[in-house]
Length: 91
Image 1 (cartoon, helix red, strand yellow):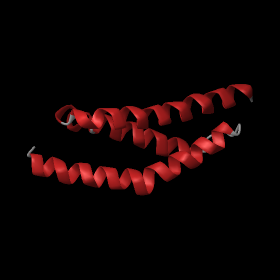
Image 2: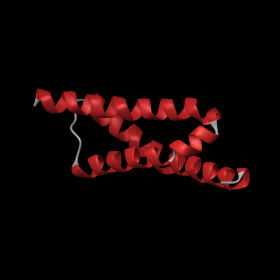
Image 3: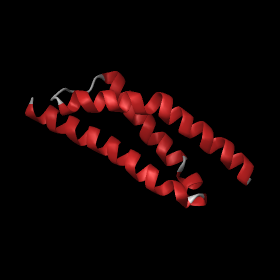
Image 4: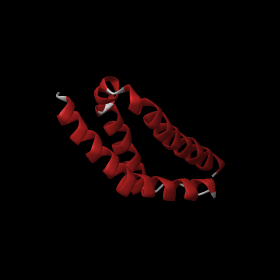
């Protein structure tokens, strides 16, 4: 892929994250931090996010300056899933 094509893809991904993914993730985080469980819709959202994360790996490999951001974002999703699992196990 060309640098220009990557640039457009990166901009689109960052916009989607900022405007769509992050607000939903923060809402879910707040819910699970308060002891809540994930709904089916939230589980589908997280599955989609993890699938998309695999798809952007080649882009991050070509642009290592994105690695820190991706790590932090994945850390947020890991926190959500770990906390949700704890909540499920507690009943």
